[in-house]
Image (cartoon, rainbow, N blue to C red):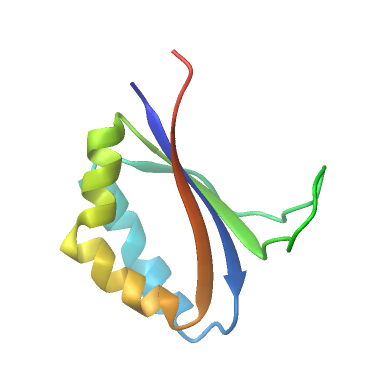
Length: 97
């Protein structure tokens, strides 16, 4: 069953972004994933809390691939870089099938 990782990002500084975004697409691809949304201009439609600066949706063929991507050494090394300038809220969900 198709799985999605959905993330909301609060950006504190942009020093890490060029390096991270030049490398992350290959890591996603290695795990058979693809970006459905990357960045965007979030607009609140309902609810409260802090509106993220940007958001992403990654699609994977299944949870196994999504979880392998998240746990991979390649992604975790990029996550350290990302955390130097961004706070992330991310969830894993299944598609309707």
